[in-house]
Length: 249
Image: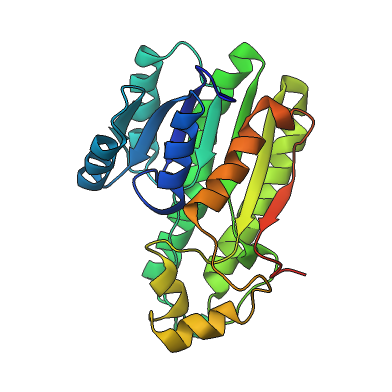
């Protein structure tokens, strides 16, 4: 029970890595708020969890007013915020960097970068009040070892790694730890988008670059997020931890 009674937000918690993190945090005693734009998926997932310690809140994480309203609602439910997991993310389809549309570029940076700005804007002052907290940002190996034709996605995750380190050094005196996880491509709804198509051939091509020979899973990322959010990682801040089967070696 490493997160017993810890109040936790998981953005993008209705599917993929986020869903895995939600389930593991509940197992470890946390109270979890799933923040997602897909209410149908979130409610269905919550039903499968059969827990009275999880609830759902809708928010458009790229809209400041929506995020402000989200935190207003949360502060009527909780007296403190212990853990924030910035997991919500998206990508553009593989393409030459000059062929990615401005619309797709804006969407990638709105979801992958601006959402972290907004959640931090409201979560950090709350954590400062209690002089404690843990923030876990889900970045990507794309930030450290970019694949071609995903340039603007790679850049958004590089932004997240730099933001993580800067947040960590600024917030250390407030006893707020900030770390990032860099997963390799995983068995999530975004996998087909990263590969361009989900075929045996594209899977083989991706897997050939991962020494351990498999994609990451929600359980892999959840276990890492649990460690970084827990008191066991009390001396760890500002890291970008690779969970990649050796891909970045």
